Image 1 (cartoon, rainbow, N blue to C red):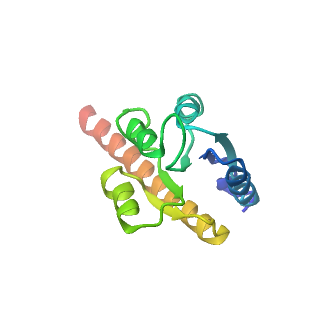
Image 2: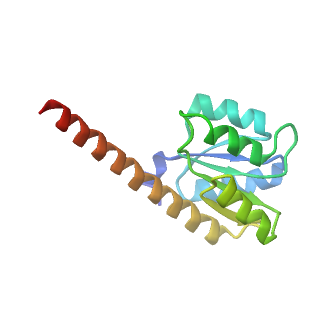
Length: 150
């Protein structure tokens, strides 16, 4: 996908396992994404505030601050509430992904071990939804401004 609009999109990969981070980086780089990494939740929140990624790939089980806590902090902040989050986790039970999606507000959920094709398709899908939402927001703002000017 190099040369497309996607090569400008920044993805923050957050996982305390170095091998998982390297694997995700490799897959994402191969698809033209810019990748930043964090190895715990505290570091992730700092990087989000500095770098404003387009998407987070977020592990759940991490030291200092788990993925649920990171997700909650992002969703409760006006500046970061709309950043898409895909949980990438070893937690495979239905109750885990339903909690992540319905209670925490994650956009998607992928279980380990990582399937590169599935990951790539989820990332593309979630980013496509983000672009649609951003375009809709801009249209609403334009329309609102037009109505104010009348």
